[in-house]
Image 1 (tube, rainbow, N blue to C red):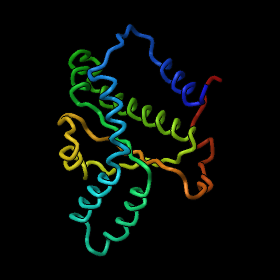
Image 2: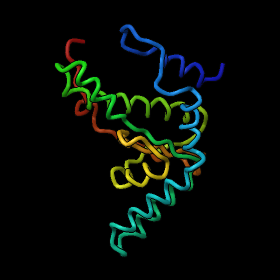
Image 3: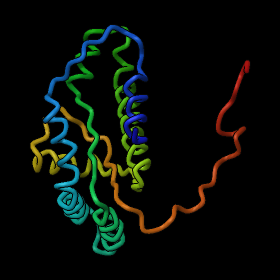
Image 4: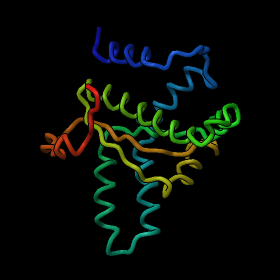
Length: 183
């Protein structure tokens, strides 16, 4: 069994244990199509991003940004992660006691999805980086791909084969990063 299959089996089984119904608001084909669009329209996304920044940056600052964006465009694909605001609002109405928490929980859930996809791509030998060019590109991205108006762009996961090894990562001292009590 390939690693990614086992990995996604683990992710599928990692959940809060409540009564759930196995249904979706869109078909499996649509889900596949959305992910496929990340590869098919990857270059266009980074052209939109460049166009957007060219309008707001000075002529002196734009070349450095353009170089960075061209680096992302050089990747194989980009996956866009969104939060459906109507879903968040519906949960706020359904559970008013926790209404103020749902936006945070949606962000956390989105982050878990980003991590899962990134880890699966990494397991298959692809490199990734996570970008956040929203809200600067939101309107143009929405218009280009007919994204529902209530979907809020959260991040862009760029992926492709690597051309260099990752540099050494430094960390804060463990005592500054987290605390353990009672263990």
